[in-house]
Length: 196
Image (cartoon, rainbow, N blue to C red; front, side, top):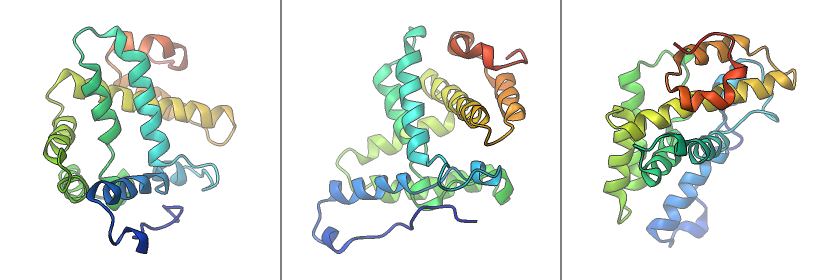
């Protein structure tokens, strides 16, 4: 199965590039990495969402919905939304069908995040933010995780509306997982099952 549009490459022009330029081009590789679960559902590569597209959707939903939560730091929410899948630059999109356990997946992705971010002046802070998301210890991290699930369900709904998949099982499964009523409210019509 083709899981990327193109493999990550280091262009000759980057040989003398700054640390920031190198990190930027590494991060841009997320535009090439497919969300593999959609491929497994039969979405053709030409229509398949990339990790970068998912990240954009996630960040936009966070921006649109964070106002419903007065306990959230919006800047931190957006930071977490933008970096939550950064490890997939080198690891790819690991799905349950890959047989990789959660701790191994986190370890692999963290190593990739460190490889990309550690050389940057603010790398330690960004790595800490990635760790915050993974540990789910703050309201911001839990909110972004909730939005991550919601974005997945909305993408399933979009593919279903285009008659590319039957996504009812995905949509309803996510509906059962969502706990934040204010977050779910604008989209509750998509979920048959109660989120509680």
